[in-house]
Image (cartoon, rainbow, N blue to C red; front, side):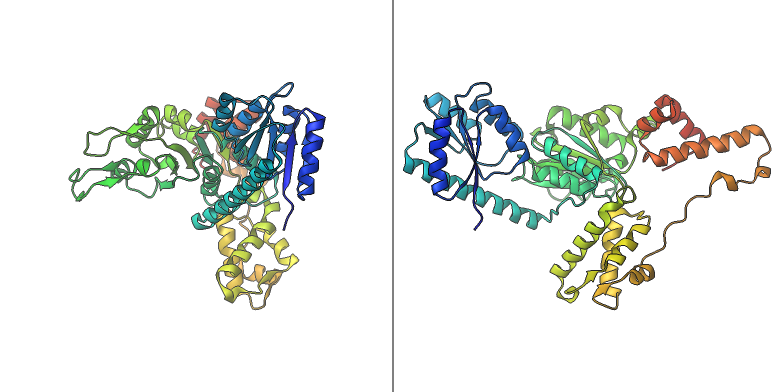
Length: 456
């Protein structure tokens, strides 16, 4: 059985020494800290099973440390220690999430019982969280590339808050997985995570889907229906492909976000909802705003924290880990795939493809290779035979026939359009970043895109 790690935070050396001797005798692994700021640094870089935290310390005191940990979604149990315990202090510590409150010097038996109970509870929470993830089908965000590290770091910061997040990226990059991880690491993870694909629901039915309807509200409404906002009460609602939502529906969503209340279609009752809304899209909403297809006020409501999920072709170093993980999942679900593996050459061969369908396409390809490869070890030849060829690159401007242009103006426009499109592709159609690199105003770049009819 693994040794439990405990962080002991107290500015008195004698107290730390006494507690350390007691806890190490019980076979616990102890790490010490003499100040609140130092403790926060240690906790930011290391995992512990329990924290023993003194309240009265020079500098940042224990309650300030506990409050910051609470704001950041810290789940490890914390036992507070105080030489000047009062009911008010104990109540304040409990409100901030402390597991227990002990007076110094603590009674030996009382201390050990509290420590054991806190550790038992922590193990139960960890097991419950793991089980919930399995039931909900939430998988890890895989990859070691810099963009994926940035996404994980952003999720760790934003998940404990109620800030709205706009997740952008191409189809198949894993935008819903990012949303689910935000929910799983939030304080709302015991409530529902509800996802709505706005592109898959006809416009005339979307309002009913989101807000529900009363019996008889329209033809076919033979009974009352609860909408997604109500289903996600106290939890998280993902509005997927929100760029495809009609302007009329956008206005109603904006109102729900502003007022925290909805009304079912055909009803008059105002229903209060406490929902964290996340949104995802494969479209550039700034361009949609310029084109009059998306409300700018809704965009600013939704994009408090933007997270962009890069295409797989921009993080190819993650492909081997992803492919191996997908194959492991297959072997766990179906015994007929047992023993299947990738050769190193096969994993290298997978790097030579464009993956326009991103992670979703890679997952499908791994399943195809597992089924159709002739041997237990999937080879580079299997990849060459069973995976579609790399998409040919666009012809370079050097291959252009100058006789195709009648005027200098025509030729200049063609070259300008190709140059701008190549830069947009280079920066993954991030308009602001591309405009900055080109030395253009963002509005000027929009005009160029519209003039040349450029599309992602």
